Each structure stands twice: as structure tokens, then as C-alpha cells.
Amino acid sequence: MANYPELKDRVALITGAAQGIGAETARLFAAQGCRVAVVDIDAGNGEKVAAAIRDGGGNARLFRTDITDASSVETCIAGIAQAFGGLDIVINCAGGYGRLATVEDMPIDEWDRTVALNLRSVFLICKAAIPLLKKSKAGRIINVSSISGRTVHAASSPAYGAAKAGVTQLTRFLAFQLGPDNITANAIAPITTLTPRVAALRTEADIERIAAQVPLRRLAVPEDHAQAMLFLASDAAALHQWRRARRQRRPGDDVEDLRNRTAPSAPSHLPAPHRPVSHLVMHRRPPAVPWRLRRCRICATNVPAHPRPPRRAAPKPSISAAP
Image (tube, rainbow, N blue to C red; front, side):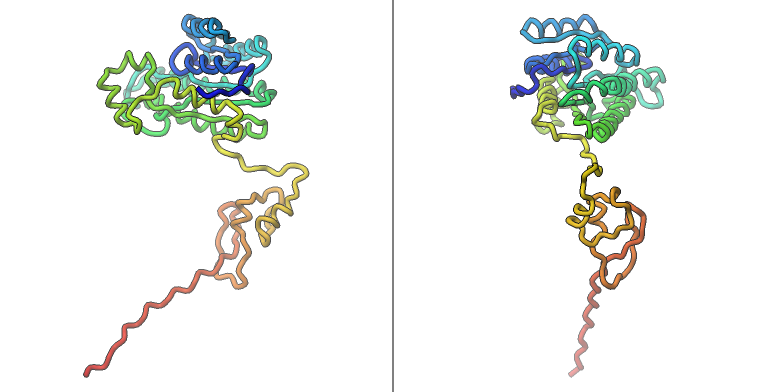
């Protein structure tokens, strides 16, 4: 297992930590020296995970929480801040669905429960945790999405797939909005993982069939995903962000120098603070004799386009005189 000494004494909140991927993630983060908040509505199994970590010399505490309820989440975050003094890492592992059904046959309450568990919970946890993460020197948000949020297959729930797709897009917004606060946000999208629950529900033939679709010809185990999340929480992933936000102008930036260095002849029809580098590249030195005008896709203004090279006329066939 990789070693990340910088994680020692950092506080990690892990939802769904009573079993499966969440439980394994809690154990691995505790082994790195993190102080782990085991967040789950299943107090029995959650306390077992926390107790096992403490028995192994780690620091873990159970916070029984209904992550679909806003007041319960706020109480949980306040308790973590009081118990550990802050928060550095948020990992949203909780998720799942109750039954397979088509959109036509799915009960509305089943849809609501699935979306609340998989998407609303991520929003509530992140919203409540952001003020604490802004105080951290290395804030991290890691969300567990799913391959079902990226593709469609019969052995998944439409509500689950739609919610996980929402988790992916929410992670993009988090990365974009929290980057200036030195908080990274990333998501992993596992395929079927061989957790105890999956092993109990799937037959051996099902597992072999699913594994045959994986290039490595095996299903992932919870530790595979936990190791990936360890890396994303470490300082080695300090610049790993779902989408790198376009750098905004800050006081003291020499915009004219940046403009002149990147595109010497860029037109100045936009105010200087709103001229990103990629936009300046589109407005390269205009030709001496514009061949035509084109509309800029960013600012919707007409700019001169470079002339296209003239087309070569097809050679005329030579006609030789008849003998």
C-alpha cells in the first residue's frame, strides 16, 4: 500500500462507511493516520468499523446520520468540528438503489428515495462541509459516482444512473467554484464492485459474465477504489481537479503584458480583464487583405478571417491531333 505521511492527523469524513467501499476507505485512511468520521445511518455496523479502527491504533468515531435530511447533516458536521477541531477531506461513498424497474414501471417514491440517497446527500454533505474545508490548508472532496452515470445498461436503475450522472456534474461545479479556495473536487466512477452485498446478490455466473467485460478480467474490490481515493486526498494530487477553471485576472496582473506575449496583434474589442488567452489566440494578426469575415464563437463579433489558399484548377486534358 502506498504511504502518504502528509495525511497524518487530517480529518476525513466518509459517508456510507458502515460497509462496502466506505468501510474499506475508512480503514485505509485511518491506517494513514487520518482521524476518521464514520458517517452512516447504520449505527450497528458503523460502530463495528469505528471500533475495529480504534483497536488497530487508529482514531475513528461514529456519527449516526441520515444524509438525506438537512438538519441531520448539519448536526453531523457540527459534531465533527467539535470532536476533531475541523475537517479536511470529504468522501461521499453512500449510495445504491432498491429495485430494478423501467421508467414506466418505477414508483415515484422509489425514484425520490434513490435520487435523495445518491445525489441529494452529496449536495447536503458538501454544502455543510464547505465552510470547514475553506479553513483547511488541503481541502479535498471525493465523490463516488458510477459507470451507470456514464452509460446505460439493463442491469441498473434509471433513477440510480440519473442520480450518479448528477453527482458527476455536481463535482464539476464544486471543482470550478472551490478551486480558488485551494479545494479540489474529484469523482471516481466504479463499475460493479465485489463487495459482500454484491457477492450475496450475484451468482458466480453473473460475476464471471460481468468480469468478462472488464479488460483485466476481474471485478474491482473495495480496496481498489479506496487506494484511488487515498491518492486523490494526498498532496500528490494537489493539482488534480475535475476541470481546471479558467484563471481569472487578479489585482497586480499585467494584462497588457499577457496579451502582448500571447497574441501581439489581438484586437481590443473586449475589456482587458475579460480577454482570456484562448480568446486572444482566436484573434490572431488579421490579414492585410481580409478575404471574408467570420463570427467569433466567444464574443460573437465579426473578425477578419485569413484568406484561404486558392484552389488549383484541375488540369485540362490535352487533346492531341489525330494522325
